[in-house]
Length: 423
Image 1 (spheres, rainbow, N blue to C red):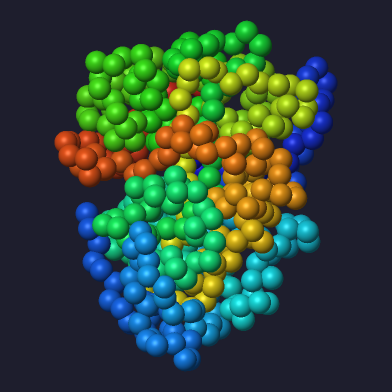
Image 2 (cartoon, rainbow, N blue to C red):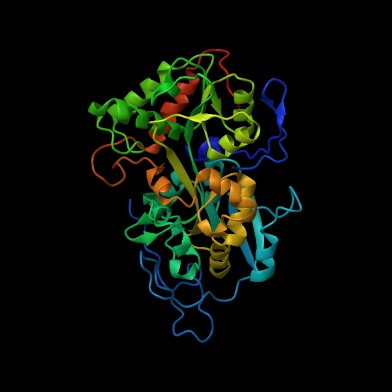
């Protein structure tokens, strides 16, 4: 689901057709790609931006859904500690043409100390160690950080391009709590089920006996639950990311029914494309980016009709007590702007949250994701962290830890010698 946990997208640039319809796999770079909290007191030296001289007040009001005009961001503190996924921030190390970090440092005066990880688990552990000002979080991690009070509510009035981001993305449950905003959407993706040739069809096709490729993530359980929502209405599944124990059992049973030596659990783009191009599988969960790759290689895939789509949004968040709040807000401004989101989308193969970035090198990515079609965006069921209170809607659901344990058990019960594609 989304690029979360172990299934963080590994960006792979893929070449032309090879042999009998296969793909030349030329990986030029593999990168990463994706209860109430205590209120933040304002002003505090370490938790809010400092107003520039001449402003009426040094206090920056807390963020709400409609923030009042705030003082401008003050002078940068000089250094910014950033935690993100591989590929989400580039400084020219992989390619001299791929660099949207250096311009930020030059224009902001903030020197970035960058740490990059590959999984949500690794990010959670690293962030707990402390010292970071900002991080890019997946929905499962974002929900946990808000619950634990480890991130601060944002004054979105200080983020120039915030209102350019579609409302559908800005108001996802995992990014808001009690009318406070905790995340600025950065990159997003959507899962599609595709088949090649005369592969299986229908909403349950991915979970049949035919060899299939499924994302290696606990949140892939939500896709199975979504398939059941349309075929077994008696289960009364409303939100596939908030499941009662009985609903979770049904989803796990569906996943287990298709277990066998032909199933592939994929972690990275390169590995998924290998499995499809070698015809190990004929049906798979993919991203629009993968569909475009195969289209360009004269290997078009067909998206299964009647299968609803899940997706995810990775967002920038502010630490509860950042050492450099002014540099942090300058960073949030930069990473929500066209100048950062356009190269990030082109490099990662993910959609930019800011539609204004859909030009130049990101144009093809945006077309693949249909970024400017708001109707398509409304049809995507975006991920949120599973919680015991069913996302605040009441009832008794299984939390993310329970999902992770069930997924681990599913993988452990795989038959000996079963195909697994990994890093």
